[in-house]
Length: 132
Image (cartoon, rainbow, N blue to C red; front, side):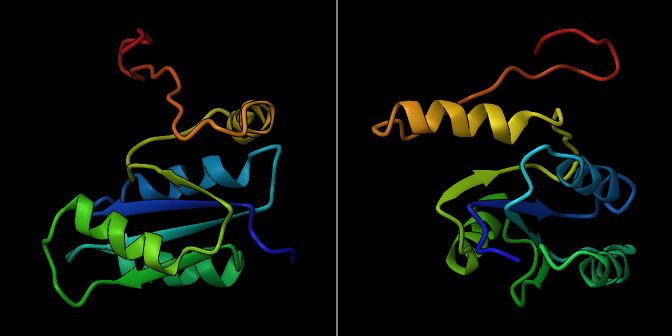
């Protein structure tokens, strides 16, 4: 596999029911040169087993179990950032999903505006299908 262009940092506290859907939304992307770093902040559910299984299936998925637990999403993002290898860094919550063209759209914008340092995309609620 080529070196990842995009690193996605995913903090997860107890999201075993949704993490697989979140990661499947990454695997369905039209742009495939990415790595996902799932940073576990002290889960007491099936996260370790699910992540080890998914990382064996797909080498782009990496699992980091924090030794200091319950430090919050910012600490998890910092740790994931430390271990990331991509040119671009994106944060994703473990209960969110992305449209399959998310990376392609972002990369197109970033390559056309090299000074761009941050970008936000619209979000929708699955429950109401309304813009947030």
